[in-house]
Image (cartoon, rainbow, N blue to C red; front, side):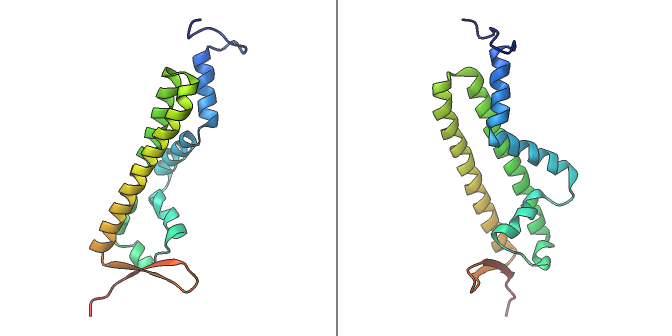
Length: 150
């Protein structure tokens, strides 16, 4: 049977698989959101998510090193999502479905874990160079603050 035979909806099988991929893959949807958002806002996308993990005061957010960090991380995660989508699409179009399921999952985990490691290492390096420290508040929340020299 040809790769390009027509299936039940009159579309080539490859096009049906692509539509299924786009509808079902959350990495593809996240990638599209990131790319659209990068072009529409003046502030890096990661800066919007930073408060979810560690609230930063306005003076810390205004530091050039922190602004550059957020910009780098925004592009990093756009690349992570684009890479995950590209690998998934390539696998979807080139390997049997049974192989795709396991391989795409492992590839997505590997790419995402690499993104997390790069994010944490870049964030820690930038925080140290900017003179920032973190503390756990009594309510259990993580808070970042600027360390003032004595």
